[in-house]
Image (cartoon, rainbow over all chains, first blue to last red; front, side, top):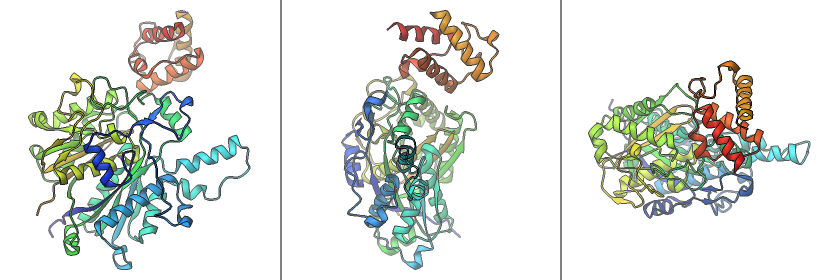
Length: 406
Length: 79
């Protein structure tokens, strides 16, 4: 049996630069960063004051009040993004195809807002009990479960938590499930809402957050900027997409994953290289075919230097003519959701023939000397693109996408 | 002041990391002592609490030896 081809027919986005794919993409192309002072935590209590928060999010017109009450903010993000992806693809989930459908969501931390409230109630307010829905709202599978309930999806539904690579692992798993015939369509991606006082304090303590903004690959970079958001994509077999007459946005062709097995936070270049190579092997493509990489590009000293060295090793001479960018400079580092936002950016880049830029770039760093599409998007039609994710814990996941053509 | 800071570093590293106090020298690098980047963050954070000062992230990341830690702390206390 020939391997089944898997295509993307819908995308949904909640992010600091737009609460739908259209606005998100337009802001990426215009190099508009969503990074600024956060207001969900009192900045006077924090060493760093900037983040990429989602503004003006209101799910009340899209989700029934009784359902909304079951969801923490991160689950609401996923459900709204999933609805956008489903609406764009035009797919209808029924009892019949529901069994053959999957939901795979990535998140690093799950429902931290509900969890935070339990701390406030117990430790600050000295209450003797907490909200009765604290458990279902806090559980990291809250997003995947609520998406499945809203859509009537009754096949494989689960959550992947691999820190900053969670969404790439989720999308890659969904791709393989469909390609291998275990289901026919899937909603995959991730969501994250990290702006709670306790969680920001934990990031403050590990000393990798920038005091100003996120400047990936720039000599002046001072660290990452936390973001929140969700990206969900609708994947299905090429056969079904054609049968339904759906618009195909891109094809997903490869997935590679690896573990550094070395240090809990310091990335190992060899692990990153292996994940990129495996994604291209899985796609049966060669390095010269890659026309763009949406880099992990956190804006930390260590990641960016390591990532560029890894790209140069894997791509050899082709690295000299291979544009890369880090869109985290605009949507922030949304942790478990970040690679879902970046997957959508990559899909849109292939579809529209425009490569999104690296914003806030100031000065070339000799250790990151590569074409980083600084500060302005670039019109360029490309055929293949990679999207990199390298997580704390040494977990790497890389996706390969292809411009849609017969 | 620098002796006091050094003494504090040696105490922290011996109690928290089980490093023999005698082996901790002013010229030791963190690498010599088997400390990685996270251990360094932990150490500097403890020193910040102890001396009630703040060391910026970028400065923290360039501290790789006991001498640099002492100098960084002294600078923060002095300013």
